[in-house]
Length: 109
Image (tube, rainbow, N blue to C red; front, side):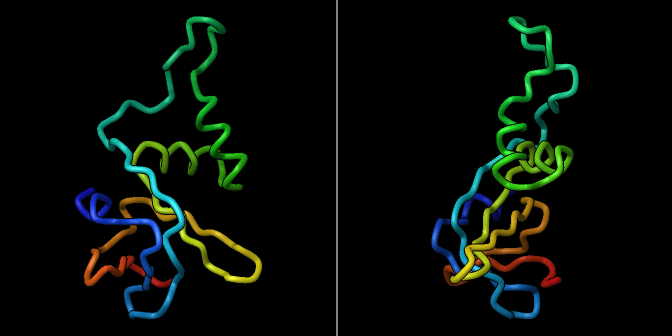
């Protein structure tokens, strides 16, 4: 979590071996102690209150489970390619450190 507090948009992102991974496009600081969407009922619809998760799931292309996990723990959206604009989503638990305005991730693969 401490690493997330140092991340800024536009930072270069590198893998554990120092190879370029991409550039931070966006981030969301989560709350790992938060209760998940399971059991949180919307009083108006009596349904699970997960519209924010569903919206993130659709826009990111992630599975529902992964979208919910990243919303809870926090994530960094990384722009991978200049031409096609591919993106990767890294959970706060995948970040290693910020050093000299560079975000290092725990693995490259």
